[in-house]
Image 1 (cartoon, rainbow, N blue to C red):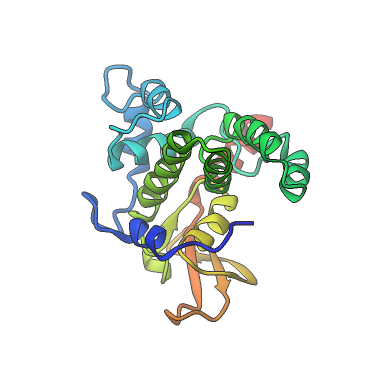
Image 2 (image 1 turned 120 degrees about the horizontal axis):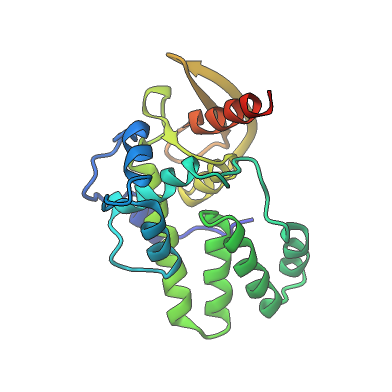
Length: 227
């Protein structure tokens, strides 16, 4: 689980950026651009920069690399890192070096897991590697900001677009809330959404809404391919 998130981190996520909030992703454009080798947003090139912790990646580029990953052949919206169970044991045992090793493996399999980025940053800082810790912390914040640029999540008309259910829980924590134990799948004008119940909070937000259409599109494609 995430530790208590500081006010500073929440402020970073909400701080105004180049994108207006509620800028819904244009998936047709994202698919086209990330598959075009001549495009500035060609996926392989963006991914290489992302993996190298390139600090010059813009919020727009983060959006393209994040949502663009859902159009790749290896996209797995419901998958888990193969080291997940081992990682939980290492975290519970406070085995810092082992956690760092396993978090790197987990992120090699699932690049955009905010929780793993957070934990790796925290463990690197614990080991005294402030440069490495800052790199993964900044990546987590930049990725989080890119995702929430699609919506504030406070209504079904301003849902946050995600490509993994895990990212819903991670964003709830990163935004300073706690999951209240209730989840419902709803439909808004043909778009599938997860309605996530929150515990009582100072902002009086009862639910956060997440658009999960890319997850459903991936499942539809999988079933069609199997026919």
